[in-house]
Length: 362
Image (cartoon, rainbow, N blue to C red):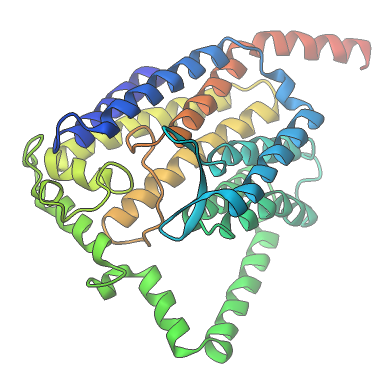
């Protein structure tokens, strides 16, 4: 059910990016990425991934991808002022995408081993350091969108792990107080203006808010039933930028209307529901926390992207899962689902091993 809920979203993305130009290079490349992603999904689903529970494996992978995040700042391709990609000619690679999965795995490992003493405030700080390293490296690129997803993954997993909400509230209260003091006593007027424009882009529709304004028009003009596939004027007339990547939701909503958006939301709901169901069936806390983290990962992408498409959130360059053009995020999403399915498939073997170790006192 999870896999078959993903298929229509892949089709929606392909149809949307190909409906305005015909023979789109994005369409052809996306087909390749879909085949690769689906192949990785089935390959990993049939592989025993219990080795990911080993601290040495996770730390090694974390250090490797962190090194790639540092390297991309130096030698990566600059796109719109951000060095987030390794350009290999026919394809490119964004290391921040696999890092999101690694953060989920690292936090799942950390919290699963400390479920008894999880209420101590130090676990908020230590887990925050796991997320702070990639967050800092990603913000140096700068890539605010991926940095925001890293933060939301950490926040969500902290809240479901059993950490004291009182301690979490105190830390956030200190952050709010610090920002308030900076706003009142430190920030210059032009700095305040930049922050306001970034948070609420529609205040500057001729400048920084142009993309958000055009996407809002596209979404609203779809009305109930949409304008029909290939008849979205905002995209066809090039008012809506990047309709195959960041604003694919707006292009889709213009063509398919409110009814199409409801269908899309239903499919995303099925995906998240099946992920959470698999998480609840996890044999250990590690599997449960990974599944919950993966659900938070998908929900963060959907909420942030749609929020920016309708002008409620800043434009951050976050893709819509399974719909936006791009190989790095698409393959990463299928790898995450493959790991989840592998954990579920090998749960019985894991249970037998746990019973055996408990009987032997290991």
